[in-house]
Image 1 (tube, rainbow, N blue to C red):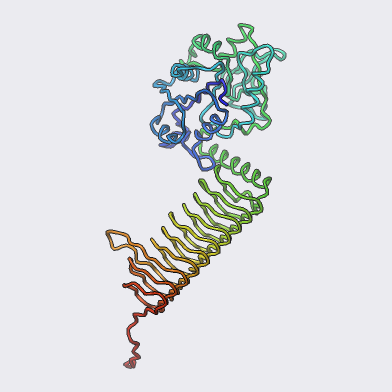
Image 2 (spheres, rainbow, N blue to C red; image 1 turned 120 degrees about the horizontal axis):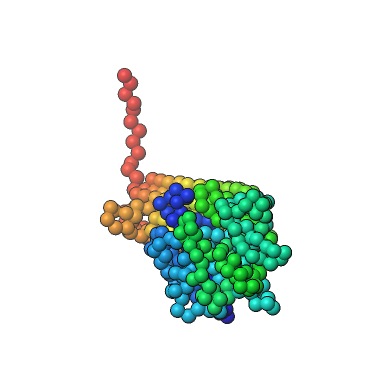
Length: 456
């Protein structure tokens, strides 16, 4: 059910401290851009509308978010501070809600549970707050705006650079997440005055304005201050990733997944894993990968956008991408499964075997040193060591079909397009240029000669 909330995400910064040609909100945390985490959390609230205020590299950000539905964009042409950015955002909202939630595009770890708590606090407040904001208490609050209070009443937010030595000792900081009564916000946002030094309009000044009007301002204190961490530098970005992967791993451990070494295992945000699966150290699971139950993945294996059913065994240092693996199959070690490949139940793909756009049938085997590209292998076929499909003639690619129960000997070249019939045999060392009928033996070796070696 849609809530009566407008969400504005501020993401117009220049990201100069990141020292990158890519704006900071597009840098990845847990496999997706920082801004995507914020958008996903915002959409989970089911708001009336979501507006992103963009500036630097706005077109790249829009492109990155093109798959997300229902987003609106506003352009902050001149960077005049957070207050000005929110003004720009509000102007683009055609049908505002009663409440406006303001988020930052570079705070990817903020949880849905925290935002729900913020909304509930605003809703249940009997005095009808005009502002409910998120705060945290830090052991080292350096760099953050401090929340000033008279007793329990919040009166202002003072930035680090403007704070007195006594104010700098305050541990409660502003987390940069605000929920406003929209009518009050709309009528008071224009009252913010430009900072005399930077000539910018600061959103935090709204707290002082509300206090001077004797309006009620409430706050929600964060339990886990890591949720509000942002990234202005590469070091801070690395810290965000470390926290994300740690949280993801412990969520999976709690759900019944075994992870041998959480500190060396990297699982991205969209990955799902069934109970009783086991991940050895150094495993990386990326993109939209889905792992079934009782799957065993050995050290150093990488899976990207894969579907793996129950009881599959993936041996060490295998790389799988955009493929599907059915139950009880065995992959690797050192196997490479490229996009478009499917491996059926109980099939075996061994060491240094590469598949590309290839279907391996139920119970079939390719155990050693083989390349199968643009190939269909039916049930219970055996592919010998050193077999390759020659699928590309320099201009076009062609398919090889290996029917069920066929046996391909070692060191065989299959020149596509070609078909190996049911139960057919191909002798070791053969180059196949024509179809092999069912249950026939194909052999193309030259006659062996034993020539005396001439001695000098």
